[in-house]
Length: 314
Ligand code: VTB
Image (cartoon, rainbow, N blue to C red):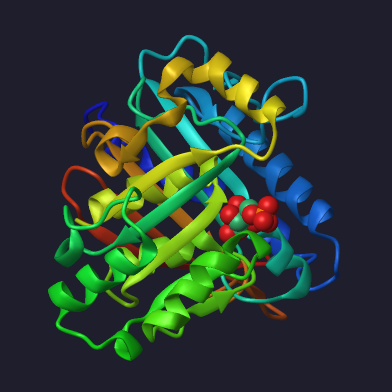
């Protein structure tokens, strides 16, 4: 097999499955931090066993705040001639894992060096949807203007639009605007990665609102391979976040990023392994083993693999 990036996917799949299984062992126990730690420890151990050199571009945070999977941490083999960049969230939707609610999963993107934006750990306004809306919406437009365009392009009435918004105080204006236009937004407590991907798949019409920026890059990579669109603009919760972001990105902090800018080119793949049932099924434990479900989406071929592996206890 050639040394192409896509050919390495089984190595990363196993790492992702193991992380999902580790988190699932404490699913529903009310301790998101523990679940996140178990997933992170497992992932780092698995990745360090690989024969590729892996650089973390999105991980658990900057070195001073994250002991593991920190930005620029090198994993795997230092002597490998295949150097890969990794954007990872070992446990996306941590809160839902703690409560055994939907869409908690291990997600990652493995890409050619320097093709993923190393996004600062701040917020991001995100608009995400399918190819039908590509090129038509803007973060600079008012919510109502974007909704009007959605109705026109999708040939739907406002009440027929399925728009997912995270249930947060910061979205009160957006939610009020949507309701005044006749749209009944679908409010979710957490998990805008799976919602963004479902929007690209056309299962819902849009993901709309502010979530975490690093996960925005991971979502954008998946969305791009699904021919959808992603628009993101950084949002800063304080001057400290703005200063940190400026150090990483300079004047680009005010830019509106598209899926093609957050994830450059097509030499990459995305993997998600379910922890709790949702966009993908969660880990199933039985008396004889464990069953885990994953999706791998390839940037170049745009192929989607649904992988269901069963590991016996023996
Ligand atoms: C959201 C949620 C994610 O981060 O992006 C959240 O969808 C950030 O928003 O699942 P809050 O700080 O308001 O929770 C996650 O929880 C993790 O990426």
